[in-house]
Structure formats: structure tokens, C-alpha cells
Image (tube, rainbow, N blue to C red; front, side, top):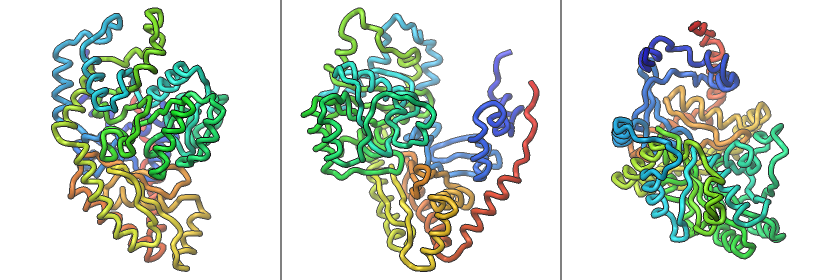
Length: 466
């Protein structure tokens, strides 16, 4: 009997968290239940998610930036249905199919003039792994320099570039790397000076914390890389594809990296795809002879459905003017949030570019609020930011995330299709919660009740024996 998706969802509805707890990552299920985030979502459309009770949630996480075009975009669905119906000869492997060439053409055309070629893979981490290999081969050097607070993925090579030590613990030894403070030109100069660095790998806007380097850092960093014959690798996996109001975030500073990594939004949210764009000299140093034609490859990297998803996504970006739309909405969003910084002592800063936004919370100035803040921090570092995320979800049905562990920053990654209605709704919701946070301990009690009730609310239900 053919697999019936709808029937399986009906028959096993409500077993989600038990299946994950018993057969997959039990700690993820535990965290979501503790925070009361254990919803049974049944549909996604545009900027919204819908659960089995009919409640609607504004998705300001967008799959960690995957759903730039929102969920269930009709043009993407149509293109993928058409591709399936065409019975395309997929992954012949000993073949050069047309669609990968078309997507490579589109991406190279959107990059700076020095970029000439593309390699396709399945994820951002795999794209970073490819960039590491290409850089080491092209330069004949081993060492990679990265920035503190960086996040480039969790596979072994990418993990060596991870600024979060909690991710690296127990997984070493890793490849040779050097960490420098993000935005510190002098530290970068010292790291590159020995002349043994293959690449400086960095995000133009850091995802963990939504950190921005000083504008002057970027041209100086590029010049240092050129001087020391180190490749400049821009990780655009999250910040790219219009997220910051430019197609590539590094365009804001007029940079011309040697290698660019992409993924997330390129998929349209349907078929995983990653891409590595590189200069001809880098690319051809790797694929330098007929014997090296397969020296680096990925089984699913050029699969036809992924290529269709990428091409349909780029077409929708052009048709709907997504990049400029994200820029305009980002400016309006920042302007709408700024009065809250002036009104509330605990909201210190709104930072970011376009629709990659960080809300930084910190110690207030008035004595009573400062005492309350210190008490919270004594309970757990950065508890306040979690106290923002939880009531945003429960009171206002807005899905957000804390930007990183032990960091009082809430990160906003809404779909790039949001407009005035979603911006206004979020600002009003944040205003409501910040008002409570500044008036008394009520928000802390609400947070505590939510956690306590959530831990009791969902009793384990038996998983069906099938």
C-alpha cells in the first residue's frame, strides 16, 4: 500500500513529542515542553503557523531564516509540482544536467565580478566545509582564522570555527584555527602576520547575538587578507539572500570575497540546498586536471528538485522585489522599535540590518529595577531575555528565540515578506511585555507559572505500537 501522508498525520496525531523523546533527541522535547512551546502545528502559510486548536502564530524565527519568502509560497509549490510531474532524470551523476548550470548562472550573476563558479551541496555547514577545503588547497596552508561568537555550523570542520565553546566540548581535537575578536583589526593583523593562514572565515553580521563590526573593520580586513595572501570567506548562510536589505550582506561594505557560502533561504523552505561561490583561481586550483574531476563532490548536491527550488526562489525574489522590500521594512521596523529603547530602561539597544534584528536587554539605571535585574541574573545568566520570549509566545502567539545561550539578546528573523501589520503587532506585543517587566515582579511570576504548568500539562501519551 502506498504511503498516505494525510492518513499518517491523522492516525498518529499528538505523538510528536513522545516519539522525539523516545527515539530522537529527548532534551529538545524536554526544553520545548518546559517552556510551553510544545504545540502541534498543522499548517504554515506566509508569516504564520497554525496549530491543531486553530490558533495562529506569527513566525519571527522563520526556520532560522530559511523562510525568507514565507511558508507555502505558491510559485515555489507550482515549480516543484511541475518538476515532479516532468519525471526529470535526477542524480544520474555521470551527467551534466541543465538545471544546476542555470542556478549557477543565476548566483554568479548576483555576486561581484570576481566570482566565476559555483559548487552545490545540501546545507550551510556543508558549504563551510567545502570553503575550508577549497581555501586550504588553493593556498597550500592549513590554518583558518575565525571570530569570537561565530557560528558556521556543527560538522567537524565548521565546529573548529565555532565561537561557542559549549558546542565544541567533547568533540576534539579539531583542525588548526585561531580566534580573533569580531571587528578587531589589530588582532586580525597579528593572526595573519605569520603568513600561514589559508582563510579568514567570517559572517558579515553574526547570527549569534546579531553582532555588527565597525564599518571601518571590513575594508581593513579585506586589505589585510590581500596583503597576506589569505582568502576572504564570507559566510552568507543566514545574513545573505536579502536578509539585511542587500542580496549579499557584504555588499553593504563594498567587499569582494574570494569565497561565499550560501544556504537556508535559497531552498525556499522545501528542498535543502547549499552553494559555494568562488573565484576561478580558487575553483580551478581544486579541479585542476581531469584526474581531479571528482575530488570534491556531494551525492545530493545537484539534485534536480533542489535546483528547481533555488531557481524558483530567485525568480520570486525578483518578481516581488524582496531585497528592497526587506530593506524598507527593516528601516520601518527599527524606527518603530526605537521609542521602546527610550521608554524602557531594560531595553538597551536595537541593532542589526534589514530584517536581521537583535534586541539587547541590560541592567537598568533605577535602583529598584536594578535590584530586580540582579536577582534574575543570580538565578540564571540571561534569564530576562527568556522572560521576553516566553510571554511573546504565550500571550501574543509570536515565535522568537534568544540569540544565544547566556546572552540577553532576543533575535528576530521574520520572513522578508512581512509588512506594516506584522511590524505593528510585534511592537505592540513587546511594549506590553516590557511594561509589565518594569512595573513589578508580575512578569517573573507569570514566567514561573508558565514553566510549572507546562511541566505538568502534557502527560506522556503512549506511542502507538505499529
